[in-house]
Image (cartoon, rainbow, N blue to C red; front, side, top):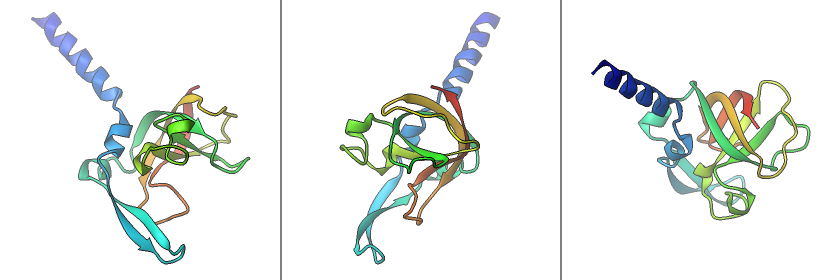
Length: 143
């Protein structure tokens, strides 16, 4: 019985550490609203309570590198999907991308590199210069 209890504990702990935050992001509802500055409709997020509870906490995510940020900047964009299917080029929605602000200048990445990033989650509702999901003080875990 003790062995069974230890096995359940290990499996539960492993499952919690491998949380898929793309699925959490997908629970966000988006509503089109007119954005005066650009003269067009943009999608504004309504974040679910469970995602709001994670704001400011460190999370780890895996995603595909998308070359969208200016060269030499300390941030990148990662996507749930490869470039051909991402929000900018394919059919993915705004919940399928995240901005990553590195603590130190990041390594060079190639299009569609699958990378793992750890950083503090920040949710963005109204700054149209940034995406809705942001990882701050991020570090590269795996390339």
